[in-house]
Amino acid sequence: MAITAQDVNKLRQMTGAGMMDCKKALTEAEGDFEKAVDILRKKGQKVSASRADRETKEGVVVTRVADGGAKGILLSLTCETDFVAKNEEFGAFANTLIDLAVNNGCTEKEQILALPFENITVAEKIVEMTGKIGEKIEISHYEVINAEKVVTYIHSNGKLGVLVGMVNTSGADVEEAGKDVAMQIAAMNPVAVDKDGVDASMIEREIEIGKEQARAEGKPEEMLEKIALGKLQKFYKESTLLSQQFVKDNSVSIAQYLNNVSKGLTVNAFKRISIG
Image 1: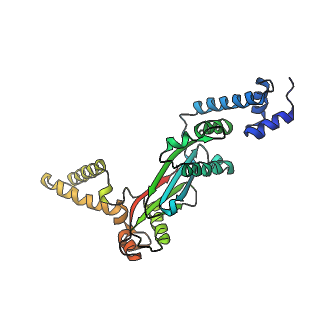
Image 2 (image 1 turned 90 degrees about the horizontal axis):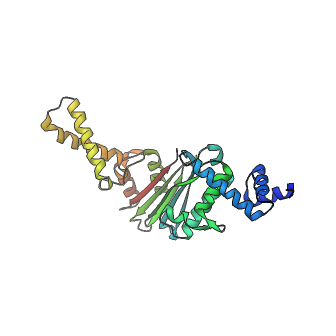
């Protein structure tokens, strides 16, 4: 049967796929729109599979605050090129996904992928969009934290996002302080809130590095452990959030800055996502 330009345009409006792809799909489906949609989805699956090994170094980070400010959610949707990342539809899709995640109480990425989306699942929709756009698309990160007050921050490039959980607020307005701490996290990339949160394997590695450095400097073997532990304390000061010098005022640590804002105010958790 003859496929008209109106038919092609209708399918394009339904699916967002390219004109030639729509024409080929309709021709193969002999004018049956449902079959044509399935053909386009199958094409998407093929494109997705063929691009599975591609790296997604571009994209957007989006955040939400829920439960009256006590829960923070952070999601990154990534793709292959900056051109796609800056596309309005791509950004809108990222925001739709995080809203779905919040509304359904998702705690991990796999739960989002299983959610229904336009009569298919989110995972299937991502495959469909991969076929339509011709690039690998994926939810790369999904993070949730809980605190008395969660403050969010998105860097101006849209590729870096932070959640900060504030506790012991004593009813004070800590939004501005939270933003300051979030920007500290964005800039300094601490490994943990404090030394108690540093992974044991990281501590072991730092001690070994400290020993090797001291050994290379010709220090006696019996002194290596003590020297390495001293270097570890420096690592804590430079790499854990509460011990770091406040970038806006190097005369105080983050812990001191927060205590000056409101006595006892501190951070119980944070998450930082950066694309690229």
